[in-house]
Amino acid sequence: MLQKYRILGKKGEGSFAEVLACQNLRDGQVYACKRLKGDFTSAEQALNLTEVKALRRLNPHSHIVQLYDVIYDKRSGRLALIFELMDINMHELLHARKRPLPEFRVKSYMFQLFKSLDYIHSNGIFHRDIKPENILIRDSLLKLADFGSCRSMYTTPPYTEYIATRWYRPPECLLTNGYYTYKMDIWAAGCVFFEILT
Image 1: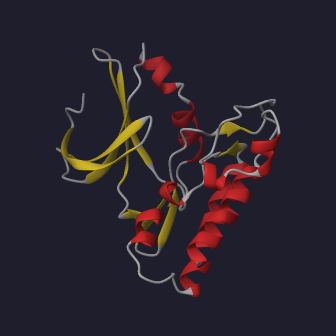
Image 2: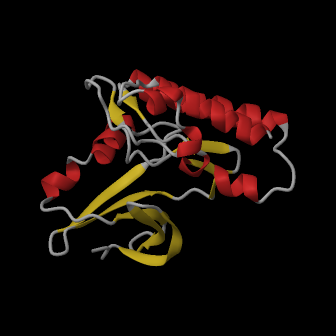
């Protein structure tokens, strides 16, 4: 499936995908490979995946993780997405520290996060899973990742009721039958703000 790339090791795993570090055999560049766990019946179905369509629409942007390649293996039905490789996610960064981040760093990260949200919302997309694990960091640069749960703002609710990670889920997701909007991303960003301050 990944003939162009050599797998270097596992970076993480979620419910729907595993993330691997891989190296392009042609130029030696190292990337992140998100290998989806589900099977796809055709390349067209894989390319119509919400995450792929959203990232193609949003890229490039300085605060959205860059999608470089989409690899569909017809024989196995598996799909791999090749992204730029970032150093760490916000969750890992916070848990590696003994004390909270300095306020200037929190201010910088939150500014970048809100820039990414403003950009995706102005492009008609809401993320629906803002949390530290989906916020990637390289040095002082922040990028929003994992658009696997995103939706178009122009579709009509009700949406999936059980969405977003519990600790970042807004009241309208808990108290309505799927009637929520892009504002859920702002609520979740506020939860992230509190978490990285404390």
